[in-house]
Structure formats: C-alpha cells, structure tokens
Length: 133
Image (cartoon, rainbow, N blue to C red; front, side, top):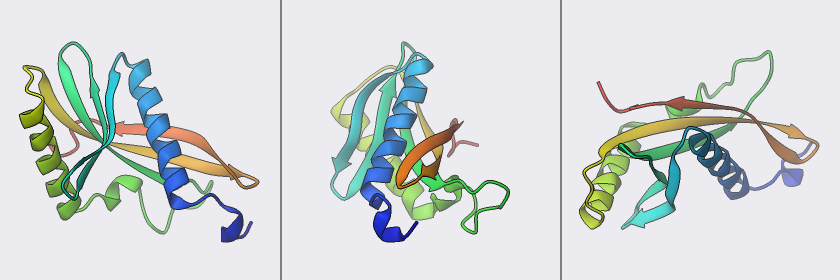
C-alpha cells in the first residue's frame, strides 16, 4: 500500500486517542477533555474517576508483526521537551479546574495495523505515572 492510500497522521492520531479513551472508560474513568490547548501546549486526554485525574499523552504507531519497529516503542517519542510541555499543560489545567483528586500523567501506546488502507487498533498499552519516579 502506498503512503498516498493511508489515512493522514491526524486521522491515525485521532484513532489512537479514541482507543485510549475507550481503554480508560473500561477502567472506570470518564473523559472530561480531549485535545485541550494551553498556549502552544496540548493535553491529548484528561480523565477522571472518583480518586484521580489523569492527563494522558497518546502515541500511536504502526505495529509490524515479527519485526521490531525502527522507531522503537511509541513512548520513546516522548522526550524531555514533550514531558515538560505536558507537565506545564497539566498544571495550567489544574489552575483552571482546581480539584482534590490525585493527579497523574500516563503515556498510552496505541498500536495499529492496516487492513488495506484502513487502520485498525491492535493493542493499547498504558504506562501509568510515566513521568513519576
């Protein structure tokens, strides 16, 4: 399949975010925001349950069966600058929406494969408290 036949990066990214949101909903979280902007910073997903508020950075990549990706795991794409921007955006969100809930930042890896030109979610891997110690 040529790259011209594949959906654009934004479409694949939205598919990954929707898959991540569905994953959290299955875990009892409610989605309270998607693609929220604070200046030039963005939060992919903001989710809550009774005790926690989660800021999720979603990375979607094509899964190649039997071969390691030349780009590594999707979470490897979250570098120092992205971490810093995610933390600053989460802090801005919490200033605008104060809560007593425990905040956490997760990175969610969404793996897709193509059936023809259609991307299909194969797996969702959540790295809880990805920026924690």
